[in-house]
Length: 177
Length: 411
Image (tube, rainbow over all chains, first blue to last red; front, top):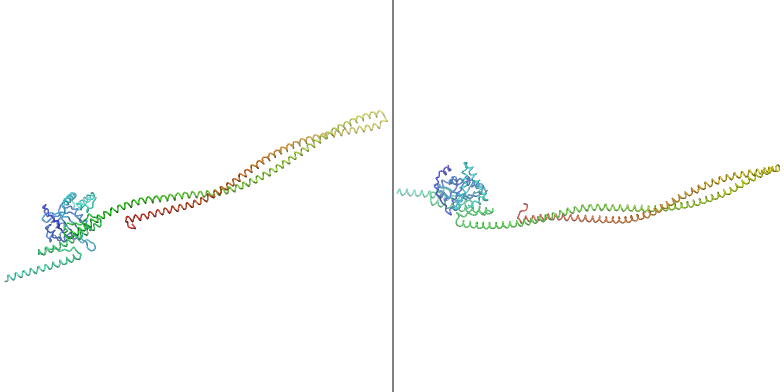
């Protein structure tokens, strides 16, 4: 149902910008359903708190984002590690905005993952350009596969190939973007 | 009046509802704040848009924002310091979105992280340097230990080799000594035998001299016998001469008797007695002649026998002389043999003395060989000790290297 909602958004091509000191904060449960969304997020995404709470986080997903980035994101955080990613999101009115997303698992006293937390900050312009170029490459790879799962695998393989070519881990690679 | 009263009532209801909402939110706020104080930073105030009061809503957002700032700071500090502890210094505290004290504190952490990175780099450099030194030392030590071990090994092999040679020499020396002793004994036997041979030769010489003397006596005796027989021959010849004289006397007597007979015949009767005497004389003359002939025959036989005896004695004498000469020759040869035997005896005596010298020399060789074997044992022990020391040197050096490489013991 929420997936339909994402697809129903008509892209305007207009970009919105996060303030330099602003922080988008969201929390989700283990399934990625939003349990908390701060005011900055509600404002830039133009969704009400009622619309967001309980909704899947991909409510703001932009079609330009490669599937493999989210696969990598979920693979990483579900194994208990943090991840940084440049992400372009789409607001309810079809405008888009770039964020530097930092997603971390939340642990209970016993060290079990009980949810995820995401802080999003304003990215550097140059980083956005680099990310956009990289994602174009990954998307091109993914478009060669009809199955979404297959496409995500292929995109990830491409990303890993680029990483090993550069002799870097994703973390190192990310901070050079 | 009624309108005014109703207006008041509505206002009071509104205020009561507002107070109720505030009380509800105050309760939630209290809960969230208590969670935050307890370190539970997950709690947030949600559904703030249902607060229905912009002022309240702004307050709730502000509380959430304060919690988000603390949450962000805590997450960042935890992750960035964790990364730094793993040496991932590229993972810095992300300052963006943080303000005021949070930002200053984050900058302090990043400064510390930077220093840590620098120190780690220096430490790694020092560690590489130390490892290089350790590796060089290890290679050098390895070389030394291997050289020493090889030398010790070679030494042991050589000493084992010499040892076996010495064992062989010792055995050889012992057998040589034994052989020399045996030889000395045999030489002694030969010397004794030679001595005996010499004595026997002397005895033979003496007996030959004696037999030679006997032969000489025999020859002299033979010569005397020959001369006696020669005298006998001469005597027979003399007897022959006497017999011829007697034979002539007998013939003359016979002739005179014949003449007397004739004269007697002529004297007839008167002559008859005379004639008998003449006839008797005639018979005697005949008998004498006959005896003389017989004696002559015997004398001839004696002379023949005597001649044969003389010849025989001459031949015996010659034979004895040959024997004597031969005995003399033998005596000379035996004399030479005795001299030669004495020479041999002296040589053998000298050989015996030298054999003794050889035996003594072999004894020295044997004891020297034993001493050498002892020295070789010591050498082998020294080489073993060298090997042990080189091994403990290696072990000690390995521990030293492990220590300077900061390897934990047992790995």
